[in-house]
Image (tube, rainbow, N blue to C red; front, side, top):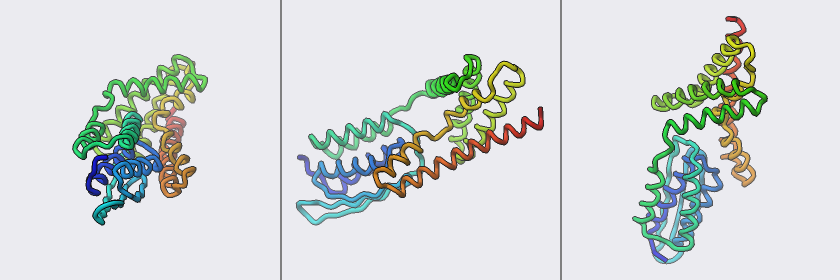
Length: 256
C-alpha cells in the first residue's frame, strides 16, 4: 500500500466529496466515499457533510501522531450522475489498490474539469422531456410540441440567468410565469390545445425531483439536518414554480 501524508489523503477525500456534492449526490454517499478513501490509505477520519459544506478531520493510525482538519464551502450544485458514478468507482478502486497523490489528483481533476453535455444536447433533452410528460398527462402530439418548445425557451432563459448569478428561486418563478403565459396564449389561439397538459409538461424541467428524492434518502440514512435542508430547498422551488404559474393564470384571466 502506498503511504501518503494525512494532508494529502484528506485533500483527495475532500476533492472527491466536493465533486459528489456539486454533482447532486446524497449526503450519506459523500460521507461514505470520504471514509472509503481515508481507510484505503490507513487514515482514520470523521466527516460532517451538509448540502452547503464539507468538514473532514483525519489522523494517522500508525506512525507519527499527525492530524488535520479541512473545510470546504459548497456554493453551486447541479445534476451530473456520470460524475457520481466515476467518483464511486474511483473510491472503490482505491480500496483494492492505492495510487500516488499526484495520480489521484490528476484523475479527480480530470473528472471535475471534464466537459459537460453541450448546450444543444441539453436543450434537446429538455424539449423531449417536456414532450413526453405532456403526452403522459393525456396531452396530444401537438400539445407535446408546444410544451417542448416552451421548455426549450425557458431552459435557455435559465442558462442565461446563471451567467448573471440570479437567484435560482427567482429563475424558477420567472420561467414558470413565462411558461404559464405562453401556454394559455397558445390555448386561446388554438382552441383544440389542452392548456393544462401543456403547462404541466413545460414546467417539468423545473421540478426538483432529485432534491426531494435525496432529501428522503438522507432521512432514511439518519442525516436529518441534510434531509431537512434539501426538503426545504425543494419546497421553496416548488412554491416559486406554483406562484409563477398561479400569477400567469390570474393575469390571463383578467386580460382575456
